[in-house]
Image (cartoon, rainbow, N blue to C red):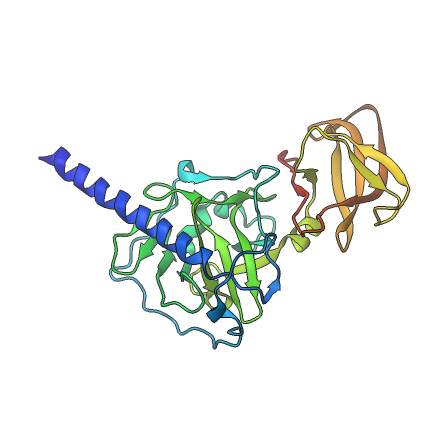
Length: 300
């Protein structure tokens, strides 16, 4: 009898998870907008009735789940997509905790910061409230709470500070933003709701993230990348950057980063006979897709 009860419970959770992901993913495909503050990396089809609705008022605060689930740390084994492949869409930025300064990230490592978050999510800016990301749970309205990483697989990326964050795919001028949170779907949220939990959140563009990174690497490993004397594709070639290099951002100008490169290197250590040079590399494509990512080697 106990096994049958457990199987029924798991069956209900699986059906709810399938509905949750499928509902938001299906709704998202028909509700992208072309009037975003920054364009999505790849234009999506839109429905005519969403045009011109950027002046929507700030959404009211929806009611909290009842009962409110106890705070938990998400199970890291259910978090996928941490190191994006070269062709993965990582959007225009990420949703992360506000304070990532040295000394505060230990308690936020991985996806543990989600235990202190309360964020209402929506299928679209024009739809009714759908549910919450709260206390480490995905809670659909009127549904069974799903523990993040245990009952529901989540899609996140790992940034330089060893924090897992949600890729933000689109930001609208009225404060709505769309972020990837499961392998199959995305949800909408509003910037006015980023401080509802005990841990305030922010939406940061990759432009800001890459400029402030301590080390970066190219998303297509194994290919030598050109470094030029000026931030232009027609500027003279200064050097080719191999995969066995330490690349440190210095300055940003548009789609270009001025970097300091040490090569050859192994991990965080320069090899005998290595040299240091500075120049400009393309960090973002014409389609505004990042060509670089945070270094997978933690040298702190």
